[in-house]
Amino acid sequence: MTRTTGLPAHEEPAPRREPAPAAREPEPRGSGSPDSEPRESGPRDRPRPRVHRAWWVAAVSFVALVGAAAFRATPGVFIDPLHDEFGWSHSTISAAVSVNVLLYGLTSPFSAALMERYGIRRIVSCALLLIAAGSGLTVFMDATWQLILCWGFLVGLGSGSMALAFAATVTNRWFIQRRGLVTGILTAGSAAGQLIFLPLVALLVEGPGWRTASLAVAVAALAVVPLVLFVLRDRPEDAGLRPYGAGPGYVTPPPAPPGAAKRALRALLDASRSKVFWLLAGTFAVCGASTNGLIGTHFVPAAHDHGMPVPAAASLLAVIGLFDLVGTVASGWFTDRFDARRLLAVYYALRGVSLLFLPLLFAETVQPTMLFFIVFYGLDWVATVPPTIALCREHFGENGAIVFGWVLASHQLGASVVAFLTGVVRDTFGSYDVAWVASGALCATAALMALVIRRRPETEVVVRT
Image (cartoon, rainbow, N blue to C red):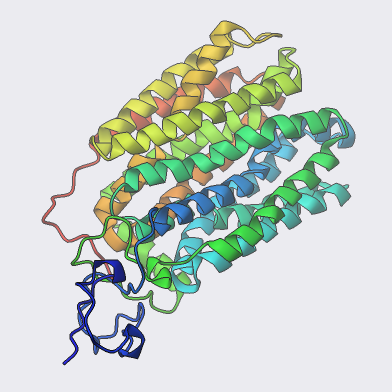
């Protein structure tokens, strides 16, 4: 009688005189059927590759996040050219940016639920197409409502569907070990996109013009779509594998129930009963306010106010992206080893101190003190993401990615409000000094909030259905 071992082909015992493996009754792939035998090693009928497929999925996800981040490099560089050509005020242009970052955050939790239901490839491909459409159509605009439609709604919805909840979903599905490290690497994809595109966009704005820069962003987003469609896979089971680091007792989680929007709202309702959720949402709102809303949107025009050329200011912002790569990956490594709450407190405290000194550092040329700020702020830019995702996973279990999507919504709400209010501050006072100091105070508050978050007892059940 033939006995099936359930081992991969390269781990089978010595060859026997039995019917070829093809003659055996195939085991259902990734079905999780209760009628099948318990799955210990997952559906695997082929030798293990030298590099686990999870790392290739992470690499493609990183590239997709780079492509989606192309537009994130444009608002700060476009504010002055749009003001000069159309006469629109800083607060008006900032309003379009506010709509963008707000929808970016509000879309994120629903996109995480949609990825659970319809798959990563479909959602990510549609998101990249929306970003390309929104950026490309701006070349035809001549009214502020068109700016809000393209920048705010189209790009906001597209980039929101490619938000950091995407990184959390990929990490949760494909990795059991090294989750903190992978989260840091994927989070750095946005920084890498800023690093690549910001100097290019600034040069295009100064040369051929902002319309050429918009088209370049659209092409960059479109170029990633084929890679996503042909390489990315939704789950390890689709490739006949277990997640990276999964032990012999790993069991594939059941598929998500129908109703992505209902699941996202239910996850919010469950999480909102926890004080931890509100502390995470509050701290992450400050994170968004002090990064995307403040520095990401207004650093370039603020430096230009002090006589610094736009390409030079944009290059400094790109250097922030360079050190963000290092800081975020390092933060992921730290998150695997240290208390995530204390990491958050340190990150916010250091960020607040640096913002208090920023008004003293602007000059017509790049000074060593400004370079020190850029390096320091870059290392801290989104270092908050890996420990925040880890805390969502720790406290909310299988709903951790969706809950993080809601926490990210608060991040973008903070960014949206501060992006608009900082434009109002500039129009009212003629400078940005008040905004820098106020954001520094907010960061100090966030550091205290992070220390209040309690640890979850390991014996407490975290999975919610």
